[in-house]
Image 1 (cartoon, rainbow, N blue to C red):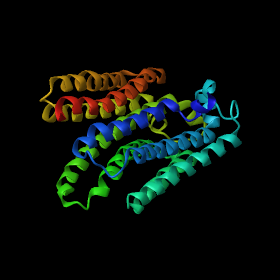
Image 2: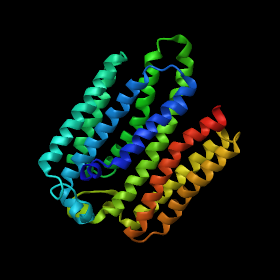
Image 3: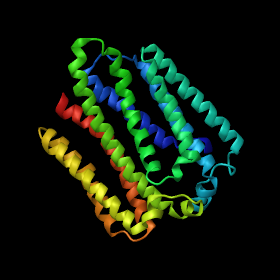
Amino acid sequence: MHYLKLIRTPNLIILALAQYIFKYYFIYYYYPMTGLSDFEFFLLVFSTVCIAAGGYVINDIMDIDTDTINKPEKVIIDTHISEKKATTLFIVLNIIGVGLGFYLSYMTNLPKFAMLFVFSSGILYLYANNLKNYIVLSNIIVAFLIAISILLVGIFSILPLYTNYIYAELNKVMFTKLLIYAGLAFAINFIREIVKDIEDIDGDYNSGRNTIPIALGIKRTGILTGILALLLFGVIGYITFNHLYSSQITSYYVFFLIMIPLLYVAISSFIAKKKSNFKPLQLILKGVMLTGIFAVVIIYKFILT
């Protein structure tokens, strides 16, 4: 049980679910035959999950002191699992994840993209070891890696077919839409990372880190969070009004389960005065991330088919 908590199993399930949904409810609509078999796609998802799990493990190893201040009841390393065992788990997870990435890159004749797996593994280690101390950069890295996990689905499902000229124009449309989805995922997770930094401000300060809340203070960071949430609200509203209007069910789904929660986060961030006010907002943003993933299914059911 402690190992499952260490690797953040619920987050890994969400990651795997997102990749499967994008594969079978988005890409499959355009490409019933893709560059990966079902088993190979499972290996891609498993590779991504292993690398992400390794990132959580090394982050907890490096964060023992900070977590003891921020959330002492949730500390696992040296409490339930030794640092040596956790380090071994980190190494094994990355060997599996990167190894599968190389295998898939070779099987799909996309050898250069093997470096994406090396990059993801390496950047997660550097993030845990040092990069999280850099203001803004740490937030960007986490959000960017979430976006990459979505793009990987398109890269390995579509690019192997790129030699077929019939698919050339469709590829452009496909990747444009996939980039929009990845961009929205980046934005939601970037905002959520800022909110998490507000919650962790005490431990980060005592550890000598420089995060946005430490640099700006909780009040001004709340205003920044509110502005970003409003901007995202506007972007999603524009997309809904211009591209999803043909389905009332889809429009209502996006409005009530994505846009309204974002508006609530924005307003609450503007008026928040202390870090405890941000705890529910972090959970709401996680919920928005989930409803955003399932929006792909709704769009497929009520607009694409």
